[in-house]
Length: 91
Image (tube, rainbow, N blue to C red; front, side, top):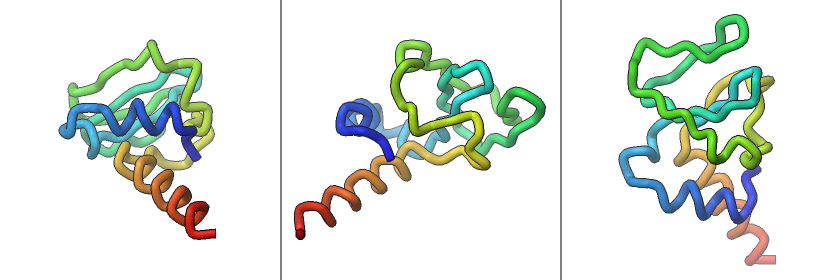
């Protein structure tokens, strides 16, 4: 799961990026991709050209790994974090 700091970063992104996929390549680079990517050799492949390289965030988002079977959407990470926080607050 993402950390609070990572949650703030993702939650403050422009709304259009909420449905983008976020993934890490084998070299550790983080990408935002507007269409669902798939793995091929050592990269994520997508049939779209709208890909954002997020080198500023390379040392955070440690829960996003190359070994992940599928890339997840930004909104999925946000909702997962909020759901976990709501469960913690109810205890």
